[in-house]
Amino acid sequence: DTSQGLQDRKLGGIITLVERHLSSPKQGKYCPLCLRSSNYHRVDWIPRAMSICLDHQCLLLDRCPNCGQYVSVEEIVDRHCRRCESDLCTTDEIIVSGDEVGINSQQFLGYLLGLQKDLIVPEGSCLSECRPAVAYQLVESLQNYFLAGNNIWTYFPTPLHDLIFGREAMGEYAQAFQNFHSYRAVCAALLDWPTGMFTFLDACKDSGLLSWGYKDFGKW
Image (cartoon, rainbow, N blue to C red):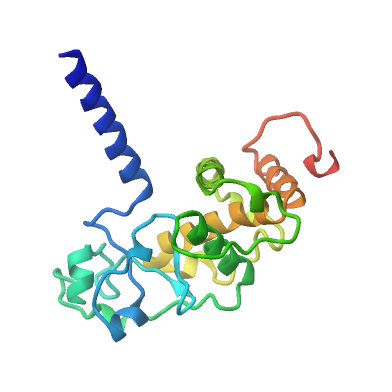
């Protein structure tokens, strides 16, 4: 009936929302340093936006170090890849401790998602008065826009850019690397409001992603 149809559509919308923002149990993420100390899957690893382990300041990885295949949450808890039986704890960690902008961006995302208690933003930032749910939706919207570009991050100046690792050298870590830096660019723009946002828009325009006729957003 009509009532059942509405309920089904509402449930379908909730499922879609969950799938969009949370990692699938069939494709988990893990910090090799955390696994070495204790083999359980942390709640901080579930949101798609979370790209690093804030405790060890290294990238969260989603593949086997040997065969390069995605690993499930069950395999992560077992600490072994089912396909080649490799020990996930032997994966080389990719440290990002020298990237202050990247770490601040992940701490900001952690706060918006309820994983961090304190909001660390520049003094006077409008984000300190913004509801977490609203700020998170803004981040997601800008990140999706960012990903619509082709290698757009090559147009971002420091601190929105400044990659630590060459993308071509990342191999099977390319996806974790891309996820970290796409959220990094978006959050850096918001944390340095409004200058950072103008820089973000300028980079989008220079990459060809925007077709607006303005020469320089930063001069508004």
